[in-house]
Length: 426
Image (cartoon, rainbow, N blue to C red; front, side):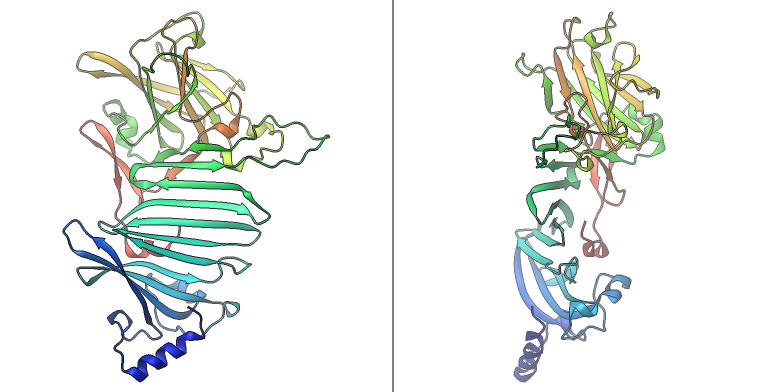
């Protein structure tokens, strides 16, 4: 709402004797902009969202506020050039009663260009907030919340340069199931005859995020041996070798449980090894990178510090084989059997890495014959020695979600949202 309309609205309200909305009592300037229907909760109570316009606030007051709700000191008229922002609030009503502050927005232009905008959409048991801003580098952030019970469903972040709107990086995340992706568009590289050719690909890549969940010491030490990966771990969905073979009979899951510790579960109907060549035996591969894939300059040849390194871990005897990049750092490996009744259906490994993982892909090489690699199942669309195809690591804050053991397997538990967190755009 423009600042020039606010005085007129207040004058009209006063002249007509209109009663201010209860949320606006003793909070001038404050105006109920709209009341939006949001369906019903599980108990059949109606859900509504009230949108308040609260004039202009000092940005310094907003940043120093202890609560998300706007306090006093606001003005009917203001200007971003004077360090002010347009103040708005969105409140949840259940059964006609105010129950929750959802959003407290203060648009200061969101960047040097001052082009920032907020957009809020309300649907059945949903509210979605989109924020756009930036200057030379533009960005869009979107967050969708379920209203009852109050949980974050999805967030999306997209960035691009103003002069290259097709060159984008986009991240999505769904905390309730610990799943998300990073999508990096194909680069538009200038030809340079003197520059070293880039070994990177020039295709758009969509990379699943590998979650890192801070698990308690008891789980990391011993609990992993008795607990299945459940729905917390990232399941491998990419068949990078053997796509035309018979129906896949193998499974792979991975979860980082500490900056340098990954739990891996692999299942198969037939096990091979140890043989003369570890590549022809059933084995797990780890590819570790130093740089998140979306931060790589894919128009230039990578430096030595950006190269990914590879290890192989043979399932039969846990032996570790340094491979691509000849990594000198050791891996720590522990292994337990996974059984269903008396049947051996797989193995679970705890692998200690040389240091914190920022980009990591896990693969299972299945060789039913014991003579060659027949299928290669991966957590990312990995291509040999290509660090931009690794899984980016996504640290899951403890206040957002965690994993707990239930019925012998890990389950995602989303932490409840609190009012103050509604004021923070991811």
